[in-house]
Structure formats: structure tokens, C-alpha cells
Amino acid sequence: MSLEAETGGEPAMTHVLSRRNILSAAMGVAGAAVVERASADSLADVPERGPGNPLTATSERSEFVHIARLPESTPGIRHVDPSRAINSKAPLDKLVGTITPADLHYERSHAGVPEIDPAKHRLLVHGMVQKNLVLTMDDILAMPSISRIAFLECTGNGWENWKSAPSDVTVQNTHGLISTNEWTGVPLSFLVDLVGVDPASTWMLAEGGDGSAVARSIPLTDEILSEGILAHGQNGEPLRPAHGFPLRLFLPGFEGNLNIKWLRRLKFGTRPFMTRWETARYTQLQADGSARQFQLHQDVNSVITSPSGMMEIRLGYTRITGLAWSGHGRIVRVEISTDGAKTWRDAVISAPALPKAQTRFQADWVWDGAPTKIVSRSTDEKGNVQPDRASFIAARNTNALFHKKKIDAAGKVRNVLA
Amino acid sequence: MSWPKALSLGALALVFATGASAYDFGRPATQAEIKLWDIDVSPDGTGLPEGRGDVARGRDVYNDNCAACHGDKGQGGFADRLQGGQGSLASDHPVKTVGSFWPYATTLFDYVRRAMPYPEPQSLSDDDTYAVVAYILNMNGIIPANATIDRSTLPSVKMPNRDGFVPDEEFRVIHNSRQK
Image 1 (cartoon, chains in turn blue, red):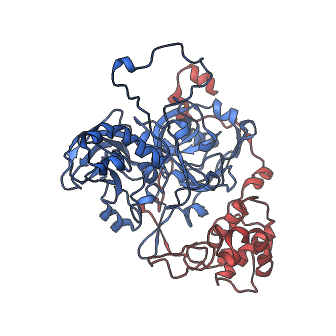
Image 2: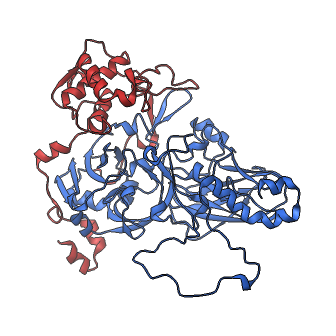
Image 3: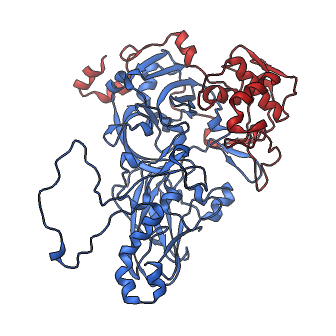
């Protein structure tokens, strides 16, 4: 509903306009709407068929589809020149299914995106190993590979809601630092065997080829040793530069920063290396002034992507849909509340519900026109249940994973805190 | 055993179980080239290079290379504040700086050397890196104005928040099935 129609008090007109204006409202804020719908009142108004455009080497999106990432700076600084952005958020409110197109996969980079010639790229593997090795990309591409569909999430995802809930933001603003791709590459375990890592080694330093040489200490747990991938492909093609071309570490279920992009060094040792990114950053300050360190698993979470912030809904039927995920395994249950977390019912989980991958859920809802709040709650196969905001703040002090939507009597949907 | 041969036999699991020879992929890394890339510095000082730097020299290095982004004396710039904030971590407005938050002085050396100055990382000499680290520690009152630091003294610098970090239980002691 446009503001004019809403205040003009013409119900019939409001009803007719509502759907188109849902989209224009989203467009005005996020800079893009999914699809412009033709207003064809009868089949005779649908445009005639005819010869189409020439076939091309790569296929572009429809000119009627406007979908893009959103470059942003630190929390609360939402509109920045892309040259000053430190991350770029995925348009969760406009994506369908569970796989994120590679060009829309969220990005967090610490010193820009290096353009690396794979012919000149090298991976050094050294430290507590039998053989210190230099590997070329040809070497790596010749090794056995596996593929895994899994999510990647920035540790800071949700930061827009940590302290407060701006009412003028979309789910892209609040939760756009997560995506799901199929990642292809060499099992970490293959490399570990290849270089003969000393069984006494318990930590591995992974270092990138970017300007800040981002480096993280990786604990060599069985989970990481068995699931880690030296990834060179995403969604069936070589990595995009923004995501680490030609080589990155991929650790399903672990915080995004560990998944070192432009990977060029692995060093095996027995202690964490205490880099800047695991001391000054990616630690969580508690109320008592101490900080939690090596909070490496991404916990169970979910978010309603439609209806979500800055959308509008109509009286009557609305389909609620969203995404749930857990760094601990498969999502087995998602519950929905449409009365502000007073009562809950199960949403339908859409196949495939893969472990450590974003999982689509849906629920039917008939909105009676009264202002309300809608909220989701997910559970993973290990029995972890997404906490509400009060419990989460009590446990962790700063964060807020719940993403509740407030719906006013006019059908406008706004981001609020649960 | 070569990988292609194993693949032709369909023996993927066998290869994974037995491991491949180091001669199948890549080439041995020489000690000289490892030294070129082996830039990490641990809290016990492992990885610190030869060389030394004092606070006075560090002030010049800072003003020439750092002040434009981090501001005069480590605050007021658009980049991270480096100075102050001690005693603020448990307040409603914690100020996390090198002086108030960073647990290890060695991490400061590591980070400055690997990532700063932002437009031209790894361009400072080791002596100048020691010097600017000394200056940043001094501006936080951690070492005196006449201090000189080197590979033997830097690891013994006690940072105010050294004991402020609590690692998650799961990653305090690492166990895996490769261990004997």
C-alpha cells in the first residue's frame, strides 16, 4: 500500500494497488525489487510472442529482475561508497530455494579483493610435517576432489540487531552475511596425509594472499580434519575472486573468518598462533570485561525472509518462508509464531535439508489485520535450539540472533527485536 | 602409487586410507623460501626477527606511515583507535584498543609486519616495525619512553589484558584420532 492510498481511506483502491506497492516499497529501500509484474488485466493484454534475443556465451538476468548485494561498512553505517565497504550482504529477501548464486554470495574482505593469476599462485605447506611442500594450482587441480553443499556465515551476521533494531532495514541488512554454495576441492585430510603431518600437531595456521595476509589458527579436531576442504570451486565453476580465487579453505559449520581466502600458506604446530583475528577481533567481550575466544562453531539460527522488513502484506493469506541453519548439523525442526512468541507451530521443512547448509522452511498464515509480531525458532539434529534474545543476551552479552518482524495494521512489516 | 592409477581402479577409499606419496604432487620447499614467507610471530617470540627499535624512532615511523589513518598518537583517525580504553572493557561503552584489549605484544608486531601500512603492507624494515610497536606500546603507558625492544624483550612485555580471554571449552585441548 502506498502511503497516499493508506491515508486516503479508499479500501477498494488500496486493495487493487497493494501487491504492486509491496514491491515498490521494497525497491525504494533496498534499491531493488525481485520482479516487476505486468499488469495484464486479460490474456489479450499479454505481449505477443516473437523471435527473441541472440544466444550468448553467458546468460544475464532478466531486465525485469533487480537483485544485488549491498556493500556496507561497520554496524550502523549502512550507506557507504563501495571503496570503503568492508562487507557486501546477500539479498536474502529476494533469493529462493537454498543455493546462493556465486555473484550474490555474501563477501567479507579485509584488504580488498586481490586479482591472482593462478599460474603464479603457490601454496606452501610446512611446519610439523614430514615434507615441506610447494604446490601449484595444477598440482591441486590434479588431486582428488569432493563437493559439499554448505553454508558460510560471517561471525558478525546479525550485528545490525545486536544493540537495537532499526525499523527501516531489510533482512538483507540484518542477516545478509550468510550464503550457501556447493564447494568443490581437495579434502584437507588428503593434504594432511600427503605432507605427513606429525600426529602431535594440534593447530594449523592458514594464511591468505590478500593485502592484510589474514591468518587464523585452525584446531585440528576430527570434525575439521574429516570435513575441511581446500576449495577451488563454487557452484560448479572456479572460485570468484571475491571468494578466494584460486584457492580457499572451507570448513563447514565454522565461522566465516576461518575459511581463509586466497590461501597460500598452511603451517602445522601445537598451539594457536594468536593472530590479530583471534585476539583483537572475532572474540566476544562479556559483561564482566572478559572475552570469549575461539567461539568457532556457528550456532543454530533461523530468519524469516518473507514477510520481512520493509515488505507489506495483504489481509488474508500470506505464506511465511525463511531459512534455518546450524554449524552443528542438520536442521530438524522450525517453529513459527505469529503472535509474538506466545504460541508456536511447526513450519514445513523443504528438501533437501542438508547438514550445515541453509534449509528452507515455509508455513501458511492467514493475517487477520491486527498488528502482531512473527518469529521463527529452529532446532538442529544435535538438539540445539535457537535461543530467544533474552536468553542469548544473558549468555553472551552482545549478540541477538532472533529476528522478529512487527506487522502494523496497515500490513507494513518492520524489523524488531524479539 | 599414482593417483590416476588408483582412480582407474576405482580405489578412491584406498588412496585416502593409505595416503599419497609426497613426490606425487608439488616439490620440496627450500628453507630459504620458507623463511621468506614464514612471517607469523607467536606469543613466546617464535618468529621474531633480528633487529631492534626504540620509542623515539617509532614516533617518526608512526607519523610518516600510520598517523594519516589512525590519528595523532593513536586516536582521532578514521582507522582503528590504538590508544586508551584501559579499564573500560566492563563498562557500557568498552573501548577496545591495543592498550586495553590486545593480549600479546607479539601479536602487534605480527600484525603490523603482515598487514601495515595498509596501502603498502610488509614494506617497513624489521627495525622500523620494532620501533613503531615500541611507540604504540609507549603511547598506552605499557613501556617507558626510553625503551628499546627486540626479539628477546618483546615477548616479556606484559599487556594489561593478557589474562582477559577465555577460550571455548571445545578448543582448549585439541584431541583427534591421529594422535598416538
